[in-house]
Image: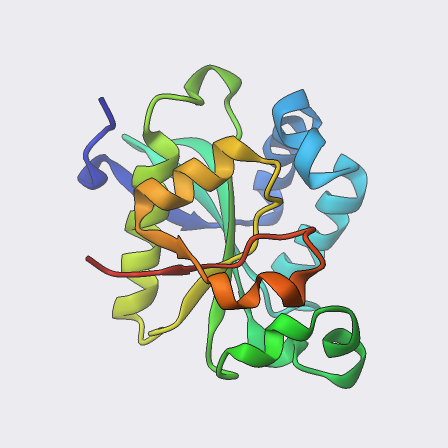
Length: 175
C-alpha cells in the first residue's frame, strides 16, 4: 500500500544535505543507474551553488528525508550540441521540464513511496506553471519505469526512434 501523498513533502537541497545524498548515491540500487557518487555530488553541489539551473530537492516522508528528486529545463538543453546526441529534445517546447528521482533509503524501495513522491512532485510542478513534464529513465531500469507509470507518466512512442534505445521518454498526464 502506497503512502498518501499528503505524507510526502519536498525540501530544496542545501550544502548540509550533500553528505546524506552522497551516502544514498553510494548505495548499489542508486549507483547502478546514477553512476559515480562523487561525480553526481559534484553536479548537485553546482546546482546548490547556482552554477547549474537544475533544481534539487530532498523527498521527505513524514518530515524525514528519504530520497532525492530534481527538475531540469529542456530549453537549456536544446542546443546544437545536445540535439545532435539527443534529437528527441526537439520534440518538446522549450518551457518543458524533466525530472529524475531516487528513493535513497534502500529499505523504503518497493513500497509505493516512489510513485507517490513522483506524482506529488509532478503535480506541484504543474501548479508552478510547468504544463509539460517529462522523464527519461533507462528502459532497463524496470523499477523506475513502473514507478513513473504508476505516477501518471506514459511513454511517448513516436520518440522511440530518436532515442537510440538508451532512454525511454515518458510524459506526465495529470489524471
